Image (cartoon, rainbow, N blue to C red; front, side, top):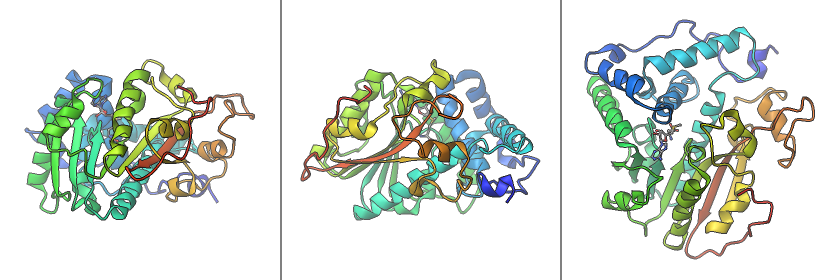
Length: 342
Ligand SMILES: C[S@@+](CC[C@H](N)C(=O)[O-])C[C@H]1O[C@@H](n2cnc3c(N)ncnc32)[C@H](O)[C@@H]1O
């Protein structure tokens, strides 16, 4: 087996030249990208970086809107990194974490909506350039709410209008979609969500993908508590990715909130069931993690309490994929132990 077969399942014949759709260069779309590159801060730009990941891992993720939502700059950046990784025969190809994370959230959203009978509300906090409302048919009975900064949602709406105008088969899959301009560090985001039609007493799936570690500890806890409180009103499911402490040190100016034990933290704020996965686990694998020696498989095989790799002394940087749920009829079955990191 060569590295490409054992590693991240990135196809050998991956196009060396990046093919960019014509739409990215039209006169209505170009100024929107100029705004992103020249006016947005790193936090908002991260929305385009994640879309670029979905666009370039298209052999496993079906997201026909990802190219236009990412834009040329972020597509080129990631494409260059992937080419370099391929050239260096790297075990982990850039974007693989994003690909697994997207597929994990897709699969959980689908399973949860199905288990709730199809009609749950779906709230995406820090929705960025997520296009699930247009690509997941499981949302056909769901009211979807996308929360993000107004600048992000405005540019996204304009890009989507151009994309939908120029492509026949793309359409909204969700029952409805509301874009809610709000900063989730502020106190008014829930009120804004409710004004947009969110009903706290309805079953809800909360999607916090690639967002909470950008918040401070107190801001993140405030958001998680607000979501956790909803467990007393309706069936509530939280899907979120958490960094452990070591991961936040990868960029201490960017990442703030962490939890080494989200499976202990979440029951203390209202959730009765928590399931934690790591990249490479059976439900977070998606055929992309065959190499037993890749970083993620090595990490999974170490107890979570181990903070540095025994092989080389490097910090164990982990990304936890967490599904937590609660409902008015259920009692909290786990207690928060003392080793909770926050
Ligand atoms: C890494 S992107 C993830 C986007 C999307 N969830 C995805 O996975 O594609 C982070 C997103 O969170 C948004 N964001 C960050 N802080 C926020 C805040 N305080 N309030 C609202 N949105 C925020 C950013 O604008 C950006 O769109």
